[in-house]
Amino acid sequence: MTITFRSETFRDDFTFRNSLYNIKRFPFPFDRDEYMYSVNMEPHIRGKADSVFENLIDVDEHYVAEMQDRALVLKEDPLRCQALPHMMTAQWDVLELLMEHQAQDYPEHFTLEKNGDRWRWVNRPMGIDDTFTFGDAATLPYPPMEYITRQAQGDFCIVDQRDNNLWMDAGMVTTQADWSLDFDIGMNFMEWHGPVPLAHQIGVFDRALKFLLNLQQGKPTRRLNWTMTVNPRLDTSPENYHKWGPDRTTVTPENVGDKMHLRVELQSLWRLPRSNAILFVIRCYLISLSELVTVPKWGRRLPRVLKSLPPEIADYKGLTRNRPIMIDWLAKYDDGAPTSAGI
Ligand code: HEM
Image (cartoon, rainbow, N blue to C red; front, side, top):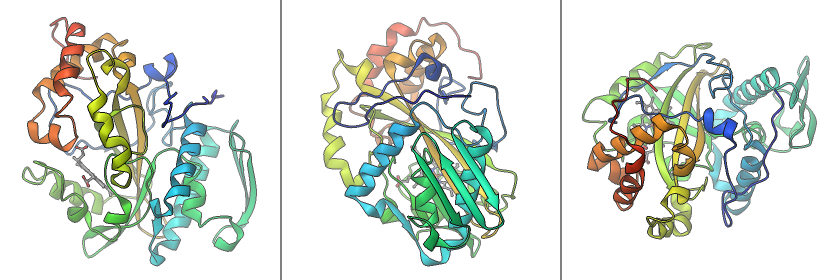
């Protein structure tokens, strides 16, 4: 499928918008009127055509603009991309995985030619045509993980598996919901999840870790996570909190529909073949409330979810201040009809 890439920004004048096609394929995350943390994992297999699950590595109309935003973040702060020295084999695993999926599913836009270890990679939307030796980092302009994740939507963590735990030992993280790779690098699964409320007590992380330690190659898994962001800003990092934190005070009943965005992360986890590490892909989708309510069942459900959200979770996601404004604005889209289970 040929994608028409939008020219848009995720900062300053915030010209990001979704086309009608992209609104329809937005991964609305709520399958009921309440939300609570759970081990909501399912096999990462291909889904319906024209959905974000059609391809396992999804490329959409925001691709080029997101890659431009990533380049700006890295220019200001190179520590958003880090890899500990023992992760080089895993870096090559990631390069291979992303190149193969993008080339297989979007042949109009990407081509991968392999001639033994000599590989040619063509990325037409970004005007890249490079030939390199797989396994020899000196033949690429960046280390392998940085090279390919400058050309792939979403944030990426590579976690190493040892001592019955997972360790965040590499990553490219420029579009995160208020956490920092530079802070978390070298931490284990329980440590980096330390700030999350309620989930530890109900055993979510014990079960999730057990599941992931047994993840098999060729059987990726996925889950959805969500939060909300004022303005369509990708880089809501602690490092730049001074830039986006104050935005929370700018939301009013008049502008909430356009300013407040639901931010959904389609997270997929892949066992890597050579290194036995796990790649954690955090693919972020943004939609303004005004765009979201064009789908009536979403407009009906979101105010119910927001109303019933436990205060600890609302606080953690930074929603406490603007929750009443959103609920009031969304109320007119809830006609009181029962919503069926499922999305
Ligand atoms: C939040 C990383 C897998 C559940 C987070 C945070 C990070 C993270 C960095 C932010 C913590 C903070 O506030 O500083 C990862 C990585 C994973 C992984 C690298 C894979 C290796 C999972 C899995 C689950 C899970 C399998 C399944 C239950 C959560 C939840 C939150 C969270 C519920 C809170 C999110 C929110 O409310 O917005 N994760 N995670 N994570 N993670 Fe994970």
